[in-house]
Image: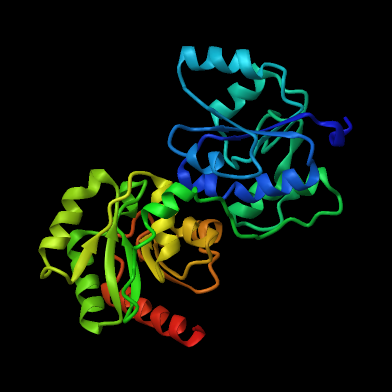
Amino acid sequence: MNFKNAEKILIVQIGRIGDMILTTPLFYELKRLFPHSKINVLASAVNKDIPLNNSSVDNVIVFEKSPTGILKLLKNLFGKSDIWIDTKDNYSRTSEYLVKTLKPKFSLGFNFDKKIFDIDLKDHTLCKHAVCINLSPINFLDSSSHAGLMRPSYNIPRLVKNKFIDLFKNEDKLNLVVNVSAGNKSRYLSKELWIDVLNNIITSEIANVYLIGLQKDKDLIDNLLNNFNEGKISFIETSDIIETSQVIFKSDFVLTPDTSVVHICSAFNKPVIAVYPAPEWNLEKFRPLSEINEVVRSKNENDVKDADAEEISQKVIKTAERIRLKN
């Protein structure tokens, strides 16, 4: 197949928000290689806002795992993709079903015990980070490419920028955004740990502290706010991931558990302190790509509940000092 003549390229990314953010370098590189091709993204309802705000993406199709949703896909995609790309690097029954049902002309993905995709991307990945995994199709499609690590990126609409235009006007201190939410229960720090960490940060007087989090975690946020005198910490409410991204962009640095907020920081090269569980493979795959970053690892293989409050606090203080030195 002459790839340069590809009219339609489809990228399948129906995972979480963080997965989509880490796929954005692939969008830019595909548009560079195929400037006249239409770049389509099959997204999930939860992660669709990222490609919708990416200048290299021409069209976003939202995946609905239902009979009606599959019928829509058959109507829109059956046999209509010249190049089908799925960079999920573990076996997915859904991935296999989609590529076999929608019958693209040519497919790239990760094969396992049986051949699912025309090209197996295992031999085209230059490192273990998720960005490298997502860029592996570029190394196959362009023999001159050595696509490895690069920061993700996407756009913030002007309307969202204007909504937060007056945020962080206090220039006496750095402004620290603390994210308390995560996509997985195992990535949540306990209320007691958060209280210890926040108390240490407030006592150090290194930064103004602002909490962010999902609506489902409002009880946790309210509990944390009620543990401190009024004005010591504040809450910034956002309605979606794009608004959250703008708050992070406007801040000086961020503290967060291992979740999509880490990758938002990478996209904007925002200094970040990130709390991870123990496994080395998880850190290798999802580590921060911000120039200034600090990592705290739990001793537990499965969660971050036993992360050390003192270590987190000290790394926040260290990051603040690094930011001041750089400025």
